[in-house]
Image (cartoon, rainbow, N blue to C red; front, top):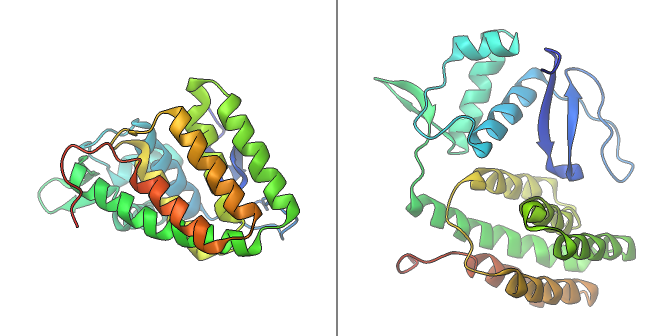
Length: 237
């Protein structure tokens, strides 16, 4: 068990799992100024992680009082966290049953893929324009780690590789939107690509970034996301 003021969450901005303490400064990457996380931020991140990992399965009820007792906080940050997760599409409110984890449905998930394709292609384009030699070295290192890793590590390393590209765009708002969509993909359609196909696409994307070809990076990133859908029917237009 963690101490009551510590919540272990997935911190994708720095591509690792860290322990965060309420009210204490955190050290972000690239020498940026320390930032503080509120109780609401921590509760939101922890609940999101539980939903993504399946610890709170689809359809399960989420009760404010129980969560306040679990996190040892007042109802206010719980209420705000639940509002945020409802806005992200992870929770839903029903007048008869209250708040519950959203049931998985392939239609909205395909929609999420399409939104991801639009946002990530834009982000890749910006990354190609702004990438430094250090950025490119980090991305290449992440790519090699991904394709040298085991199957059990693939999902985590793949996430780290892609999010390292998107931090290179240096657009906090865009990165935050993409991260939320990735967080929503704890469950959903499986990928149609095998590792060999993914590697080929990753290498093409890295080459486009290295040559600072924004247009090519945008096209590759969009295609990479959309061809990842395992189609059970026609992709709705």
